[in-house]
Image (cartoon, rainbow over all chains, first blue to last red; front, side):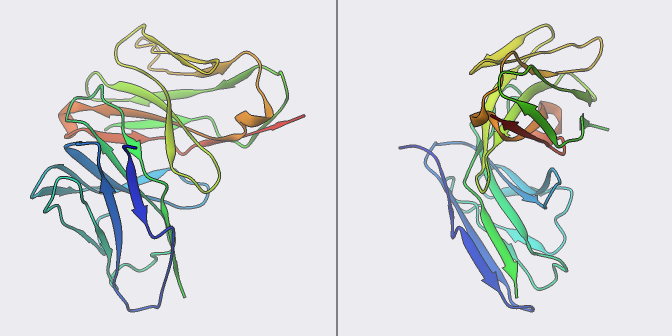
Length: 114
Length: 113
């Protein structure tokens, strides 16, 4: 089955620690995205990547970092600099840069800082 | 700038009632428009889309028409079911922004038997 796999589904982190969220897709999509969702709010873009070895900051990139070394993988690191990291994180991909193409989403990772 | 505005929820309807969720947008260009649905604890799933003015997207009894003159993409369904209970997101995509998607804040729908 083709799709986007995010892991883990639930993640707990101690304050001051960095943590990496995994996102893998086997759809052969060029573009990948990371969004943050807080309760009762919409999705806010953290980072996106249109092609391997290239990525751009979204609206709330501070305290996060990404890499895109392979087409199928776009891991997100939540660093200790992120002041309020507890949230639901969604990874998405789209086939290319055309505006008409939809985004496909993973099942999400719920991160809780303890 | 680019943005999407949705009607605020939550919305509660009885089964078989008519549903409308309003969505308006602001865009510097000609966007494609989307409706996504999110069930509890899950990611978003595409419900329908429209890529140019006057296009109508439809799926599973839901419909939305791309109205350029009113910059709107309202979601409608003639007869809702309990299984339609979810959060609905309106979104736009603009190629000239590096294929960024802009999402509304979501509208929670609960359908009661």
